[in-house]
Length: 155
Image (cartoon, rainbow, N blue to C red):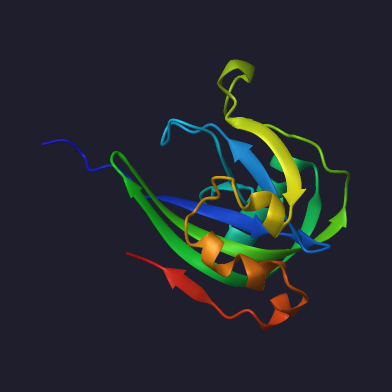
C-alpha cells in the first residue's frame, strides 16, 4: 500500500490599498488556465503562518508586510492535491511592487505570471480563486475591512 498524499499548509496575504486587492496571476498544475489569487505559499516546518505570509509576500511581490488577523480559512481538494489555506490580513510596510518568483522552481517552471492591485470592477470578468472570495470581495475591499469577521470554507 502506498503512502497517502500529504496535506499542504498554505499561508496567503490579504493586502488592500485604496480599495484594491493585491493579487498574483498563477499558472498552476491544478488548473488548465491561469487565475488570480492572493499571494501565498507553503508554510515551512518550524515557521508560523504569519512568518510564511511575510516571506511569501516578499518573494512573490517585493513587498514587506506586517500581518494581522486571520480572515479566512479554506480547504482545496483536487486529487492528488490537498491544501489547507489560511488567509491573513496584511499591512504594507515597505518595498515596491514587482513580480517575484518562487525560489523552489527554476525559471522555466515559474508559476507566477503577473502581480497587481485590482478593484472589484477589474475582477468582475476574471477567474479569482478561491471561489468564495467573490462572495466576500465587497467586504474585503471596503474601508470597513476592520469589521470583517472570520470566515471558514472548510469542506
